[in-house]
Length: 338
Image (cartoon, rainbow, N blue to C red; front, top):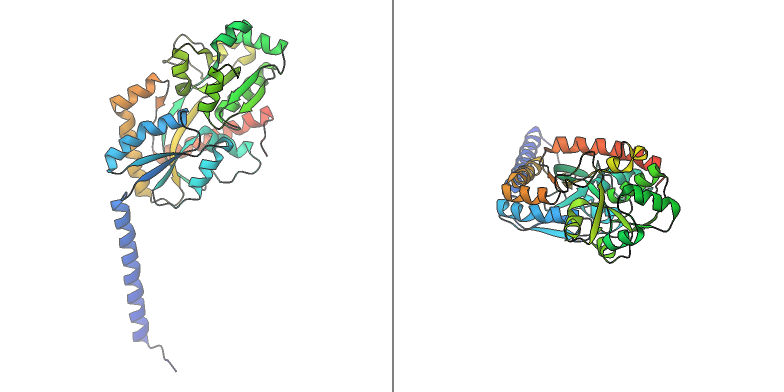
């Protein structure tokens, strides 16, 4: 029979404490040396859209700062839910990040009956990367053919031809979709919603004349607007965009029916829950530096994006307030996705 003496108990306690100390030291060393391999930034939409543009603007800057590749991985579909779920279920080790959006972290929890991730509990917010207005665009030739030169013309045509206009979006539940739903609700118009797997494929059909209208994020539409292929009727922000100073806001152009209309978008970097706080802090600091650098800042401003760089706590507060705001918009619009 084995008798557990006080001396044996003491030795076991010392061994356990030593093992715990080694584990803590190992974890601290792993955090201190992070990253030791490439880091993946998951973009939950197709390549070419605003989420993708912003991820690719900061990825090389982070690569230079940390001495490892930051690889953009496009995982589009389901209004951003496929990519967001992938990151939510990834290890919290700093090697998988998400370029989240107002859709994935502000709208979808209210819009989707069954969301495969919790936008609050499953993520560690890092920083806001940029905020942008949406822009109401039409194919330039189609707008000319229909006699639509401004928002008032659009409303008149839509009311006279209910259901004849198609409204493209980057997916169900995105800010692009909800901006259009808000417009429809406030103006009493009806357009057929056509969701895509991101802005880029939707814009291809817009430029090709297959879609009628889109409330796109400004950066992804800017090149087509400047090329004259898309006509910008209005921006959806409360103030005009410095990138398109001659284009009115929806509220300005729409008259009394659209008083108070505002539907801007934002994009930010998040990690899976459980990611070491010091890794989160290091990423936030380098993203903020990149966004403040003249080259990156000027590029984003020229595309209509306003650079961010706030703290993890500030970004968490934004996510919470945006969810409450968009929950009201979703309820008022009646939009719902099973």
